[in-house]
Amino acid sequence: MEKKKQLYLLALMAVSLIVVVLGALFSSFAGKEPRIIFLDDDDTLDSVYTKTAMNRSFLARPTFALLSTLTGYGAHIRPGRYDVGSGTSTLQVFRSLRNGRQTPVRLTIPVLRTNRDLAEFLGKNFQAKTADFEVILQDSSILATYDKTPATVMCLFVPNTYEIFWTSSPKAVIARMHKEYQNFWNEKRTMEAKQLGLTPNQVTTVASIVEQETAYNPEKPMVAGMYLNRLKQNMPLQADPTVKFALGDFTLRRILNQHLRVNSPYNTYKQKGLPPGPICIPSVESINAVLHRAEHDYLYMCAKEDFSGSHNFATTYAEHQKNAAKYTAALNARCIRSLCWWLRECSNLKYKVLFS
Image (cartoon, rainbow, N blue to C red; front, side):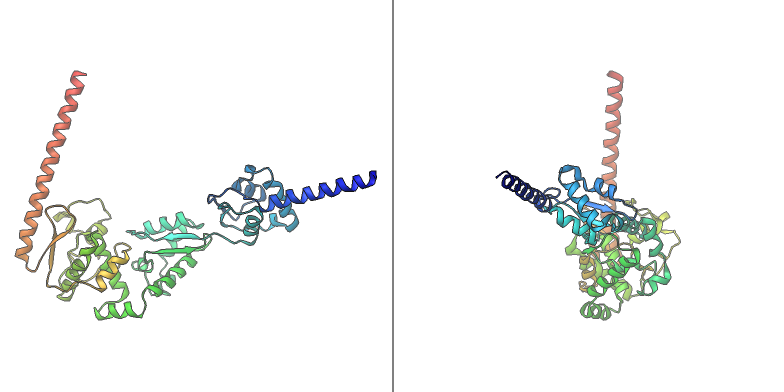
């Protein structure tokens, strides 16, 4: 009888242990919310414990440690970006980490102005550093395999959202962007560019100017049509955003004669034709605006005097001068009002200092 009791207790303990182990294996590892961790090449089992915050559950660490011992995980830690939350069980987390099943980065390409901006953006989203991306964005030999140069490499980055592994090397990221570039520049879009007498790189370059000229999407085909008209007539584009790019000063509110004297292939007041490459990564809306530009005879445009962000267009220089005069007058009036406000504030401050 005593022996039966002992066997019964042992069986009960075994069942309880199995229940505990199964509970530890299949319970939520780190809650229902997403919890992203990054494992590097030099991580150890202890640093994995720290990064996964296993102390949240008293069963998680011993269970993970047991699985690691049984499988030799400590000697085969795989770098990557992993989601250890979202209701994932301890066993699922362990399998993902051990097998290197990463949670990909959802990379949304924004409008960026320079290769430096692009390198910094990529460096913040991948294991590789900003400096690593800077090197490849300036590597003419590698870029040549994709029919690109340091001046046109931004053409590869079509704004969209892509899923890419965090551990992807700079070369792999460029290769992936080229694949997406080819998907975007399908036969239909390439033919539309050819009908305009442009290559995809040139369309992107025009689109980048359109992007910087106006944020008002309905107006973009008008702006694109104007610049294409100037190209067709072999007129300088005279696009202010290209001057800002040439100067590297994107804070300029007004382009003055002194700015127009800068010697740069990007200064479209001095140089005819298109600049060497895009002055930003243009949005898809701007690219489509070039491919489906509005057909008109306008050769000039000037910001509207109501500061709405849209423009007045003109076919003759005389008409353009009238539009420019209206905008200048409105700008001067705004500057005068700003100056009066500043003087009034200074006066109020002086009054407060004297009588406080």
